[in-house]
Structure formats: C-alpha cells, structure tokens
Image (cartoon, rainbow, N blue to C red; front, side, top):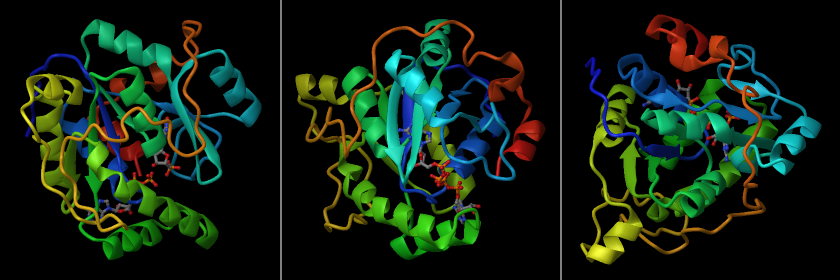
Length: 266
Ligand SMILES: Nc1ncnc2c1ncn2[C@@H]1O[C@H](COP(=O)(O)OP(=O)(O)OP(=O)(O)O)[C@@H](O)[C@H]1O
Ligand SMILES: Nc1nc2c(ncn2[C@@H]2O[C@H](COP(=O)(O)O)[C@@H](O)[C@H]2O)c(=O)[nH]1
C-alpha cells in the first residue's frame, strides 16, 4: 500500500512491551506513509551496533538528559530498565502546528504523561500474540544481555496489565498487517476518552488480547488510570526548549526515503 493522503494532524502514541515489535511495525508504516512524522527520542541508553545517533535516538549522558528535563524541553520522560528516555517537546509541537501527524514510540509511563498533558492524543497499544511469543522475540532479537532481558520482561507484566488504558489495541501477529491497522488509525477520525464520556457512547476500543498478568481483559476505552504519572516517573516540565536542539534536518528520519529507513532501522 502506498498512501500519500494526509489526514488531519494529531498525535498518536504507540506503546507496548519491549520486544513486541514497535520498531518493526513503525518501520513498515514509515516506508509507506510519508506523511507521518516519527519523533526521535533522547536516551541515556548505550547505542546498539546498528543504531545511528539522531536517527534512532539522540544518545546523551545523564547530565545532559537532566538538563533537558529540568529546562522543560521534554514533553514526557521515563526511566525504563535502568535508562532514561524522553520526547523532545519542540519538534513534536512544531510538526503538529504544521499539520503533520506525529507518532511517538514510548513506554507506558510516557503514554500516561501524554494522556495527562494532551488528552486529545490517541493512545495505541501494541500487543503480542502471546507472552511466549513476546519472550521469543525479545530473546531472539539478540541485542540485550540476560539481565536486561529479565528487567524488560518484568516491565512487560505491568505494561500488559495496562492495556485497558489505551484507546486501541493492535495485535502484532504479522508486521505488515499490524502496520496496515496502525496506518488506518493514524488517519481515522477518532473520539478521545474525554469526548466519549461527554457523548456517552460507551466503549469503542478494539477487542482485548486478555494477556495481562492479572488476567484482566480490556474494555477498550477506559477512563480509569488515565493521567497517572506511572511508576517512578514525574511529569514533564512545561517550558519551551531552545530552537534547533533536536532539529537537525540531516538526522530527521522524516527526510529519509524508505530504502534509507530500512537500512538504518533494526
Ligand atoms: N510480527 C512479528 N513476527 C515475528 N517477529 C517479529 C514480529 N514483529 C517483530 N518481530 C521481531 O521481534 C523482535 C523485536 O522487535 P522490535 O525490536 O521491533 O520490538 P520493540 O517493541 O521495538 O522493542 P523495544 O521496545 O525493546 O525497542 C525483532 O527481532 C523483530 O524482528
Ligand atoms: N517514555 C518514553 N519511553 C520511550 C521513549 N523512547 C523509547 N521509549 C521506550 O523505551 C523502551 C525501550 O526502548 P529500547 O529502544 O531501549 O529498546 C521501549 O518500550 C520504548 O517504547 C521516550 O522518548 N519516552
């Protein structure tokens, strides 16, 4: 599918447990949907061999991350499995102002912060077909040591249990199919939970995967737990950040063609 139609600009968050396939699905979305802009996060994590600074992440040390966080340059941020991650605020706000749909790939804590700060954002949960398959993917990727895999899987329980906080669930059974579904959501008209409760339409989310460790099924749209800051993360600052900090055009994956993207994504 090659869709160049540009839907109304809005912010979409894609979350899901580590190893579920967020990067794989996003790579597929971006290869076909050039109208979507993928935010590049800042992180203190060590760069993986195949990663490019400024394309996959902006890799910084903790001092720099703290400077960005304290000066309000991050829209949201979180500590995940021992590393800090955050979304540069200015680039996201600029794209939305320009009318470009924006996609954030962030963890549960970050998704909750975005929901609190921007209730109109669409939150999409990417779920694995099964927990066994999630483990297979995380281990099979071969980018983390045993200890890190264990920490990421420990987070997965909490993330799977939070599925009902999301507006939609996509099961990543087959990358291209899941990507098709995400493209559909990026361009679809959508009622936020706030709009839903005012119109009293009830649940409009997609079906539950029933994978949460608590055995809770998703009820689709849910207002419970929304706006929580999540485990250990505090809300982002509010000041605007200086222009240009993250705006290096050469490093913007939005300027890469699909071939280039395929070569830089894992
Ligand atoms: N639908 C799928 N079927 C089989 N394997 C998949 C599928 N989607 C992704 N994978 C594989 O699973 C592994 C993890 O995928 P990926 O790195 O995209 O996950 P992620 O959710 O972005 O992880 P993280 O949050 O840790 O960055 C990769 O080796 C990828 O090739
Ligand atoms: N809250 C945020 N979470 C983020 C951000 N960028 C990435 N992430 C999430 O971190 C984990 C681990 O990612 P990895 O690249 O180290 O495998 C994953 O769940 C991402 O979604 C961010 O800016 N904010």
